[in-house]
Length: 174
Image (cartoon, rainbow, N blue to C red; front, side):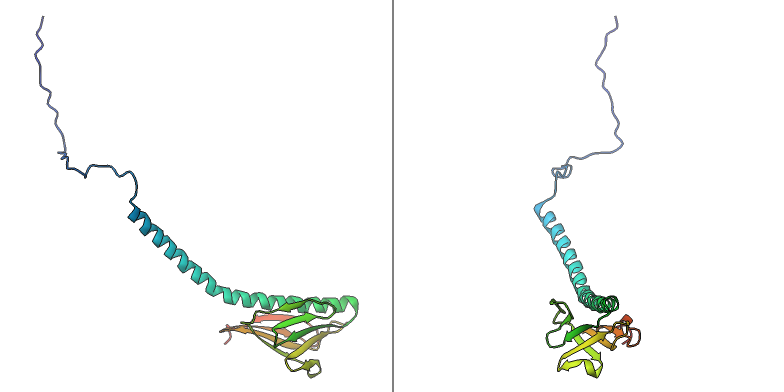
């Protein structure tokens, strides 16, 4: 029988690995400092986005107020045509409000929005109080309502002959 002698296996390594304490340890998570830094950066990013969104809020609020007034004016014209009776939209410049004849509700415009109304002399009720009247045939006394905040402005024109209402962004024109 052959005698098996202990043979030595030689394994060749292509790389020499050194075991240095701490280097070959696997990371099993993040440190509290790393998490804090990441959270700080995320919060900072969201705050910048929030500031940018709120700055556009001013012009959006102005546009909403202008569209609400246009809607009220068109409603008044439509009611005048359907009921064959005059309808009046009254503006109170001191209170930044407007109301429709036949309705008890008073509609408020934010105080930060400047309101200007140009109307027929016969429709000026008192200082700071004026109205736009729509007749049964669809015509109106005509006029212009302007809403302004900072550099943004919207203009609502009411044609006296046809009663047609047009909304225009005049801040781009200035």
